[in-house]
Length: 106
Image 1 (cartoon, rainbow, N blue to C red):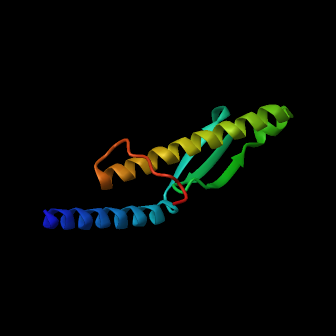
Image 2 (spheres, rainbow, N blue to C red):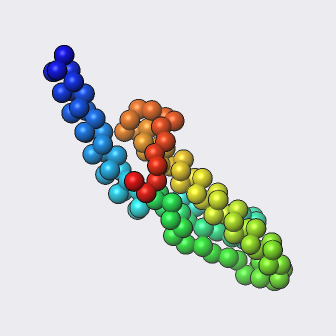
C-alpha cells in the first residue's frame, strides 16, 4: 500500500512541476480581444495582464467619453475571459481535467 502512496506522491509532484512551468510560460502566451467593431483592441497574456491597448482614431471623432470607457471595459473583459479559457485549456492538457480551475497569481 505504501508503494502505491509513493507513486501517487510522485505523480502529484510531477503534475505540480508541470503546472508551475505552465504558469511561467503563460506570460509569453497572449490573446486578442476587441470591442466596438475593432475601435478598441487589447492584448492580454496568460497571467491576466493587459499587455497592450489600442484605440482607433475613429472613436476620438465621436467625442463620447462614456462610450469610449464602455468599449475599453468590454475589450478588456473579453481579453481576460479569453485568457482564462486559454489557461484552462493548458491545464486540461496537463491534468486531463477540462474544468479544473486554478487560482491566478499562485
